[in-house]
Image 1: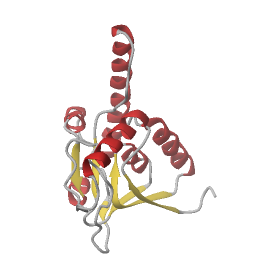
Image 2: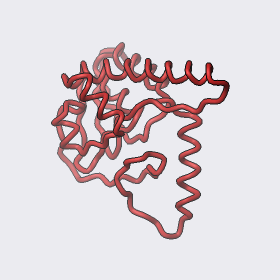
Image 3: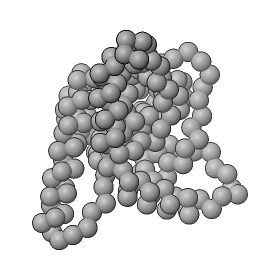
Image 4: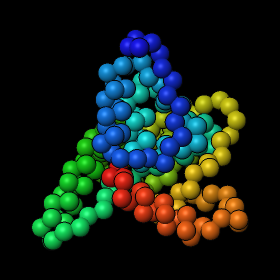
Length: 178
């Protein structure tokens, strides 16, 4: 497959940062992968997109960056080690965002600390995407209630939203570092 152009269609709330790194490494080795964000690239999914040769984002899509997360238990020394690891992960992600965007480390770190949600146009303006793609506006269908600053999603009043929010918060915090 090496050498052939690949279009990577992305609509993801993220996942494990180390899985994202592995995907980014495979993308970089292939070399001719072009990301098309159709809805959402959040958390570890953003890391995957910045490894691509180009990134386009559909109108109405979002791009979200934040500091690394994890669940931890243990004594104070173990928790300090976990916090130190999270800081290292954040620094490595900032390195790559800096290369992609040309923005300063301080600006990127502030965006990550604030859990920043970029519109398609803002993602392009800030260098995370290369262009807003032509095409129909995309409506996000993900339940993003595990995140602190997610844009409001259409609600279906037939669902128990607190149960969905709690389930997603637990799932993301148990299984997601980045």
